[in-house]
Length: 85
Image (tube, rainbow, N blue to C red; front, top):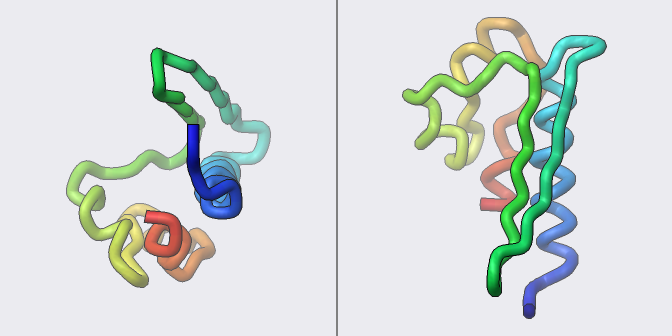
């Protein structure tokens, strides 16, 4: 398998950081990694605020944030997923 280790590290850090940041204190963040043939599947599940379906497109745009994160005054600039997308 080939890939850019630095970019992969950046993606993983951002996804895990979001899972922790948007979960309540004492919440759960579960990470699973599965290899299937020539692919690797990483799944992150958390007990956080969730992502509304109508935010799926905008969170990958610069400064795009989910409305529920903004309403709850959660920290963030909306650049993390843009930089790794």
